[in-house]
Length: 227
Image (cartoon, rainbow, N blue to C red; front, side):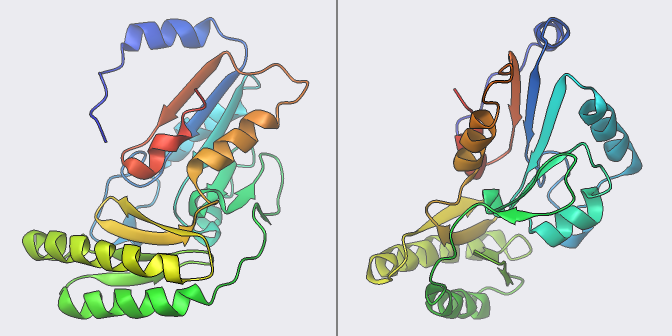
């Protein structure tokens, strides 16, 4: 992902104050929280909660956390902020602001592919000390952030090539994505770009946002921009 130019904070504040409808699309890991050795430790601080509550409670603001984390994690750590929109597993599951329930955004797909992908990830886990596999509802992620970097990078490239050769033989339409020190395999129609398009479309007759701020840290976030 290309390194973006630094934001002009003065101009950003000017645009924010002069706008009437604002949309915030925020990634979680590596953006609002740092990448840490144990993903379970990437939890919001009291200050994080305070800022998110302040932003999302402003009637001019629609604030979304669009994360690769599962709905259980997001509900546990951010569910108390009812005015916050939450998107889990890159848009597979959504909790609208001021709603209690989560719902799926995609049709139930054949999950038989997960057996094949899990076997490949388990093989590379055995080859890569410190790596592990995370089974989500609709995706499978292989994490290697705690492995020796040189070995992890080599094995990650080899693993991705292996999966890309296998994917055309599987019945589901899948893709393998490079995340921040991880590989994830998921259905092609589940991605952050799709959920952002859905959010924009949901405005319908309402005033569309005249201020949009998207913030992310890796290639999985590139599709978030509605432009």
